[in-house]
Image (cartoon, rainbow, N blue to C red):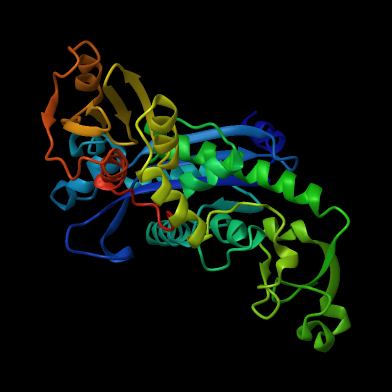
Length: 366
C-alpha cells in the first residue's frame, strides 16, 4: 500500500528552504546548523502534491546565537524541543525517495543541505539543483546584482505575510509560488525564442556566441530559453546580452532609486505619502490620528508624529514564545513596548531605521 502510494506521488520538483543558527564568532558552514526544514513537492506540471516541515534540534544549546531568535522568532527552548538532525533528514529521505529538480533560493541553502545529508550518511539520489536567485538575476538583466527574496516576491506580485518570512514552512511555499509564476511568465514571453544548449556542460548560449561555433554537433541542441529554470546556466561570454532579459524588474537602477528616495524624504506627511514611504521599505502599517503603527518581519513599532516630524518612537519588546505573543494581543496599545532613541525627526529616516534595525539573514537583499 505504501509503495503504491509513493508510485502515485511522482515528485518532479522539491522546493526546499532551511533556516539555520550560526554559532557566535563563526562564519560559513563550519558554525552553521539547520533548525528548520520546509519542503513543497510538485509533479511534472508543477502542481503541489505534498508538503513537509520539521523543527531540528541543535546539537548543543550553548551554540545558540541570539540573532537567530530575532530572525526566526524562535527561542532556543523551542528549538531544543525539535527532533535530532539525523532523525529529521532520514524522514525527509523516506518521504521524498526520488525527485528530478531540487529548487532552492541560493547556493548557501544547497551547500548546507548537501553537507548535512552526507554527514548523516543519507543517500542523495541524482537530481538537478536550481538556484532561483541566480535565475532571476539573469532574466531580469541584472547579472551579479542579486535580488533579495522579499524584493523578488514583491516584484513578482506574490502576496506574502511579512511575519511569515524566515519560517522554513512558509518560505518553501513562497519559493514554490515564485518559481511557478516566473517560469510561466518567462516561458510566455520567450515562447518563440530559442538558444543553444551544451548537453555536457549544461550551458546555454545565444546563437551568436563564439562558443557555439566551436561546439561539437553531438553536444549541441536547440532548446527554449526557459531551460534556465531546469538547472541550465548561462554562458559567461553571452550571458550579459540583453536578449536574456525578459522580465522588467527595475530593482537595480541606482540613479533613479536615489532620486526617488531623496524625493520621499521631503514629502509632507499626508496619509498618501506615509503609504508611499512604508511601501518603499515594504513594511505593513496603519494610521490612527498622528500615530503610525509599523510591523516588520520581526517586531512592531509605534511612531508618534507632530506636524511633519517624528516626536517619539516605541519598539516592541522581543517576543520569547508564541504563547507570550498571543498574550500581547490582549495588551493595551503601548504595553510590551519600550522607548527607542530617535535616529532622526524625519519620518523617512525613521522608517529606514526600523527596516534595517534587525537585518534578515537572506543574502542579496537590495
